[in-house]
Structure formats: C-alpha cells, structure tokens
Length: 186
Ligand code: SF4
Ligand code: SF4
Image 1 (cartoon, rainbow, N blue to C red):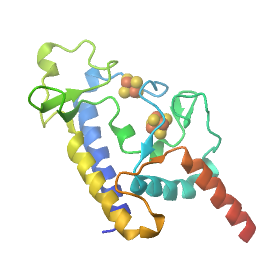
Image 2: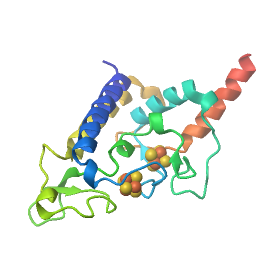
Image 3: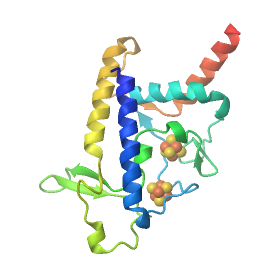
Image 4: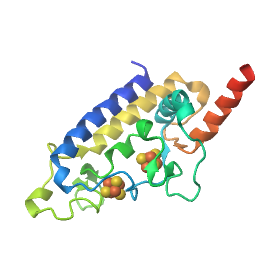
C-alpha cells in the first residue's frame, strides 16, 4: 500500500469511528454547520498535504480558491469549511472526546479532552470516558506519522525532514500553479 493509500485508509477509519461516537454522544454534541470556534489555521504532514492537494485538484472547478486572511482558518466562508470533503484528519475529530497520554501530570496518564461547547449538561457518570466511548488520538497520530515516514521515503526529491509540516494555506498556491500550468498546455 502506498503512503497516500495508507493515509486515506486511516481517514476512512476515522470517519467510521467518529460517526459511531457522534451517534453515541449525540445528546451532548452541539456541533453544527456555522459553528467554527474549533477552526484555526493548520499545518499538516506532507503525506496529508499531498493527499488533500490531489483531491482538491479534482474538485477545483467546484472549490473557490480565494482565502479569507481574517478568518481563524482561511478556508472558512460564512462559518463553513470550503474544503469539508477533504478536510484534514484533525478536523474530523473536532468536538468529540479524544483520549491522549497527558505528560503534564506527575505520572503520565490518559486524559480526555473535548470542545467546551459540548457535554455542557452532562452528568458526572456521562463524563467517564474509556476506549469504548472516546477516540485515541495518540494511536491515530502514530499511524499518521508512520504513513508520513513512508511518504518521505517514497519521495526523497521533496527533501522534507521527518518533522516538517506544511501550512494548509499552501494548498491554494499549489492549486493555482497547477491551473496556470494546465492552461498553458491547453
Ligand atoms: S480546514 Fe475546514 S474544518 Fe479544518 S480548521 Fe479549516 S475550516 Fe475548519
Ligand atoms: S467542536 Fe465546538 S466549536 Fe467546533 S463545531 Fe463542535 S461545538 Fe462548534
């Protein structure tokens, strides 16, 4: 499996799992179109950047390419994500309870975080999280890291280091360059 295929498989798994968690926690989730306080400008690993770039290249006629420099994430328009179908992995987990190893505690331990707009009226026992009702973000990040490591091996010509990330806004520059190149060929 190529690294991009690995990334896409991981993303599909995340969509299935987040769909289950959304159903499970529906009563406590206030996420809806137009709510975007979780959206900020992001950087992503090269494997994710190039996978999204390839998807957006196919969607280009339908995607408006101008960015809003004043929005918390430049891909927002009237509070909605303009690249929703191909948004990064982290955006797909927004709002849900995510479990992670917290190194800030005396003894590192698993902690869970979620958007403060959600679970507002939850009872104490509904705030008890474990593997069955939360998303282990550390495990997903490790798999993303592994897919990215493979991508760097597949594409040494891109000269990325193991921790390099790319600003998501670069997508627009790259797409515009591709469009200009395509027009020249036509
Ligand atoms: S890419 Fe879309 S979902 Fe992700 S932060 Fe930006 S606007 Fe929000
Ligand atoms: S995660 Fe929070 S800010 Fe983001 S859509 Fe859900 S409720 Fe709104």
